[in-house]
Length: 289
Image (cartoon, rainbow, N blue to C red; front, side, top):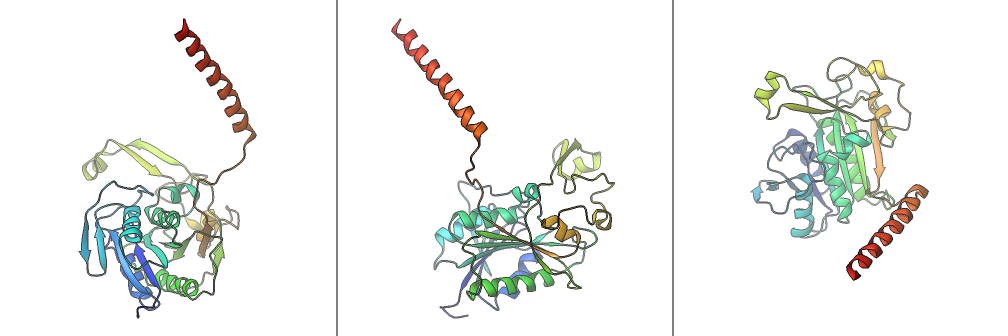
């Protein structure tokens, strides 16, 4: 790469030594000058949480931050020079599909942080066609190759992402078919709360388990249902339908907190404002007495 090469910031939530980020680093170096700024330890599930202060260590590929994925992005985009053209977050061990799961994904949270700070981003997550979560002994080669193609097209200027702040991508681990689909996150969510077993208490602190429910609309045994059993159950436009079908979901997103108009909220504000004015006036009258 030369001084004029596009610059990519690479981060994740599984930690700087995770295999997913290593696979992306090897692939993306072919199309950009890549700097890794990733958490020193696993930070899965922290969403876009930020710290007030962090320590940063040197790493052979860039930097290891003792903080969250969003900390990594904030540090890199504001403390490192020259500016980055694109942020890539991943490759996550497991999919991030559906509004609820994406909301507390550290992988997606890093991309959202980048978008807020003015740099476009791509969040990449990997899934297994049968087991949903990647099994032991897998590699991230296929999602990494796909990400290289996405990044190359974006950096070459052939694709305008002006209307999208970030892309959330879920890709299968193998390349035995499966097309790219333009998708939207599905509002299918839930959380299971139960007392921890004795074995779980030994492995983790805490007496209660709070487990995200990836398949809230289904009754099933075990961690996940058979993907064959839920085929056709989701709208075709959804990221969940793409994953169930073994395809690649690509969801273009804008950063959240988009203002909306609500007549109910209009009425609420007007009513509470009247009550608030009356309460203040009563307080003034009481003080005068």
